[in-house]
Image (cartoon, rainbow, N blue to C red):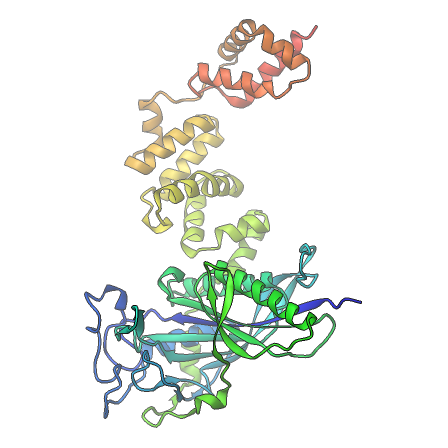
Length: 494
């Protein structure tokens, strides 16, 4: 009998913290804006002898904020350690990190996962809530940036020493979908807290997946591989899926999986071996002698806790209960804090339903932002003007088609929707007698189409309604037009 397998996935998430200065020195952390390589550097971040590090207070606050948001316990006494390994991007020959006593540990995050383990070729089926344990949240420093040429590499130390937060989960995920939901939610939390931009294309947020597989029903933790530096959700899901399938094939062929560190070749869609997987003892951790332990008081921890905003999951629940939105509608609106804030700002100025506001934001607004490559923060359309336009549509002052014309004009040049409607003569025609005249003329002019409709081609109804919309330049009340058109078609049925 053929064995079926389930994945065992744990994740490490590395996120650069949004601070002005680096983790252990006063050099600027804004390496992306540096005019040239190796200008935001000093003896500390380049590892010169005799240079002494000093912990960044802001980075410590942001790390504690993330720990609390992930339901972690904050360690009032936490320490730094030297993590020794020798690469050109680590000028000291070691990385200052946290090991035995991180700033936060023992947290959790609820995610959604398919009930059926992800097997080759199987569908997703029903879904369930899964609690993923967060083992630790710790502070460390980022490495320098390497640019590889044909037979040499260039090193830019502008990034060396930038504050880096690492979030380590337990191996609690059993599907790639659970891993995707976990990372998506972590990214949203980091952005809500304002501690990381979430811009994975720039490398400020990176994933590492620890993957193994085992027979379904087993509690065994088999040999795992670690896939490094995944900088997109697509790369994470593709790499994890590939590695799951690769390991299953090895076991089914009677082989053994080797513990190693892998890279992901996105173009070829395969994982590639980089080196044998290190364990903690390979890094020769020992306490950092140049940095005293961080001692955090209860009062300090409480002050950080008070800075916690309403987080995405809580906001999603509130949008469902208070506004009557579906879970998918609420999740869309709360996926970004700026989007959620804009929705609430528009809704507070509108007399229309939350669903109507959602429909406009998810439809016309997102289409415009995507086509213009703009973010919601760059939008110049005020919530007040947008709310007025939505209400004019709800109250049938203008038709949906005319409203889109007004919307596009407001996005491009601003202005008051009522004034634009007046200037462009876009007010909706709701005069039943006038619309009836137009409907009658269209039906009189198209007898062959009426015959086809009566013969069963009922999709022609939309064509007839479209003719009426064209005749009124999109101003006719669509619901009334459809009602009168249906009535006229039935009256002509033989």
